Length: 390
View 1: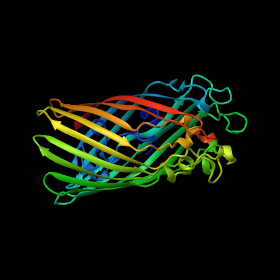
View 2: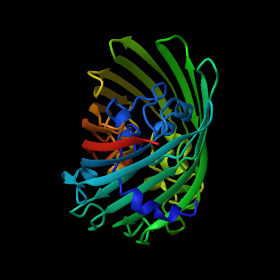
View 3: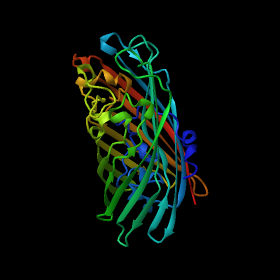
View 4: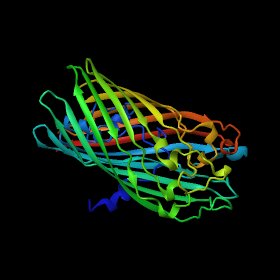
């Protein structure tokens, strides 16, 4: 773990990811299938979805890079639409490897971006200031996965999280939030998973990730509830994969992200009614827990070519009563269409790619002080990766 200081070089800045501020999927192959993968491990990034799946993939290494381009904005207090695209595109890498320790026992180390937020307004929106905000989350997840003789598997990932945050433009009278520069917080958590082979064609899986407890952002103790606390929400999910024959596999995941369990994210914004920013139980972004549905199809066209399609849908995290504070975090997209493919090279290496489109979505504020703004967003992302046997 002595090289964790290299994470800023590995995980680039991320704009608002797709399921709230979580990525829609992990690993280039899963991203091409709408993010589905709880019961369908495909590469060494599988532990990011279900650590039990690691033992099912070949000993190999993966390197991937995603270009993420969101289009986001708002009309703060109904004052006219403002785009927040000062930072227009982001590069997000991922790494992973897996090795067999003993028959039925595997170790792996995926490194990936969990998600994040970024808004950069080019025009003043609060108090005559141009607001910029950036949150990045990087995960390192050493994983052990064990398979039984009948093919069932369990897995455990220990998760190290590194978060960085920076905010400018809200140092206006009444907010009490100074421009304190970039701050870093570290945290620990775990993910456990199970994978079962029900029949020769049907596999099912389940996974649970604890809330990842992070150090508070000391420089922003006056912004986030509980004195700068910004933990990573707990998640859980179930999935199934069915071999339809003729090289075609169908995968379906249903997951829950518990945003309301983190005060700084889930607490309603009570600032306009006297709530003190940074306090215990203080104002947050008012995000609700969401359910995410991920559906993907993979088809093996030939020994070398595999193609994928997917659909990803999540319930809306931001209610119309909580839009004003969320002009700096307009994570409102809900529907995602994805395409992917893989091409095997001579010698066993494989190149994979995906494209994902998050369809435009908006949330209109309800007109109250905390819901006086409208939010909108759509996204495009494209990625490429290579894996090779070890």
